[in-house]
Length: 226
Ligand code: DC
Image (cartoon, rainbow, N blue to C red):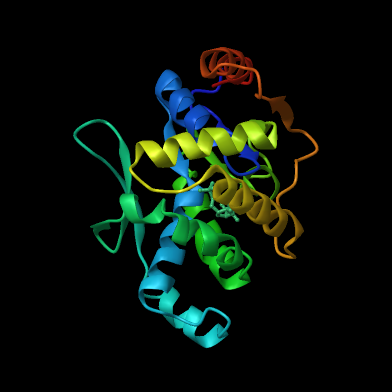
């Protein structure tokens, strides 16, 4: 068994339950969880707040030099995203950020900036990263690659439930439209589009409970040396 542990890459479409799985798996294996989507969301939130024109390359380059992102564990055990030392967890999950994050994630300078940080965070192994390009670009040699999918209607229902629980007022139609648009932009962009790595294990979790899914993937991870 590899004492260092392995890198586990979890990729897939929006709202497939990647973060739920990655968080539970990290807890079960004693691994570090890295939410790469939160990093793209934090950059997007910064751009929106600064009213930055992200079509202007120079402004983007300049802005990136003043962005520092990290994750900190809160007293209740949850992991929050910090932007320049400020807890922005609540702000990065809004529909406003969700509507701009995919266009921002098409910008190569943004991707280079974040991929470098993700690779540094994962250097120590024993970590799980979820996103869109983890198994293909960030860690092409990951010990285990999972590609999650689920029925689009089921995904929209799950995401709506999450947002309503957080007190956001949004309709199922709005959520479904956002997911469709993001999936389209994420999988058709030029720079590192969302796609399944050839050696990824594909799991459709439409009718799987989180517990069933976790048990299955934990076994797989252990077989690969986690
Ligand atoms: O996982 P999420 O829904 O929070 O991700 C938000 C957006 O960030 C997603 O629509 C595309 C982008 N993203 C990306 O391009 N690459 C990643 N590794 C993670 C997220």
